[in-house]
Length: 322
Ligand SMILES: Cc1cc2nc3c(=O)[nH]c(=O)nc-3n(C[C@H](O)[C@H](O)[C@H](O)COP(=O)(O)OP(=O)(O)OC[C@H]3O[C@@H](n4cnc5c(N)ncnc54)[C@H](O)[C@@H]3O)c2cc1C
Image (cartoon, rainbow, N blue to C red; front, side, top):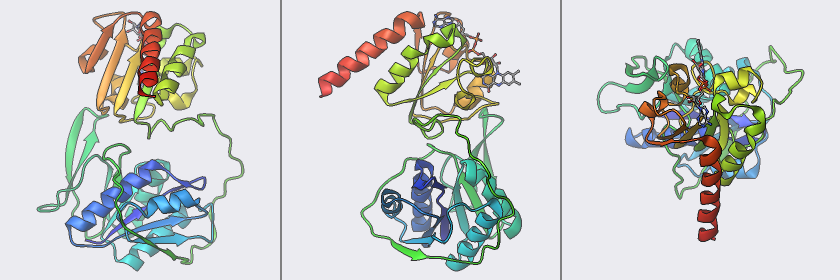
């Protein structure tokens, strides 16, 4: 099965989710006796291009004519790359661009699609793909019956794996027409630190922190660990933290390797966005807090005592490693 991987250009860089999609596509092509290719676009820094070449995909189609493509042009670019590579499967990262382009390609190509895959497809029998449903409370095995197939891959669902292989980058310039929309202004909400969706470690806090002035210790713990920061919805609703940190059913869904929840009760709507985390640590004064049922490790204690001790312990551990 020939596989095409869509690698998103995120301000001149390729983000981790696209490298994971490359690992995923390379493995499926190798297991099914097909060839894998990547389609990407715009100016990319050398580290990103070299990075793309190191995940076992031998061919990179690079549309360099443009930097910002609108969704209709990205759809045309992807379809042209599918035709060029004779791909049967197209893999997108389940990120902002992937979530917007994959359904457009699916509709244009009449390709069956699974949004939010969390594992490799079953290749020996039916082409079934595992995905989360009902806000992460259940799994579904979805069979794709069409010849052309599309998968969007949830960030952190699989690990990216570098291989010792070379890749050829080929200039690719299909006719994409004029854009139907253009971005007139781009305002960042902040969040220049670690991307929350891709973060492997997340330190998150809730209303138990009492006020925004107490987030210094949360940020310090996150900095020491190299983690992203997140929060519960009420905390962002009342303006203690920016909205892009809100995780849960109505916020961002994440799957880090470690999620540390501090002063968060563990309401079902919060759990919906974090219950795919591989290890959950909960710190809460109330031993009956629902979050403890979902926790791998729990500390019944006051955040204002426990978190400073954790910071000291992490610092001591790092000093010992130095
Ligand atoms: C339709 C809908 C969608 C929603 N979507 C989301 C969503 O996406 N994400 C989300 O988070 N919520 C969402 N909610 C809100 C959700 O139901 C909860 O109200 C919210 O998650 C609670 O936030 P919290 O845990 O920070 O606050 P609280 O429920 O007030 O819990 C605070 C916790 O802190 C503990 N605590 C207090 N002091 C300390 C201390 N000193 N040290 C340690 N622990 C302490 C308390 O014991 C308590 O467990 C949604 C609700 C609805 C109705």
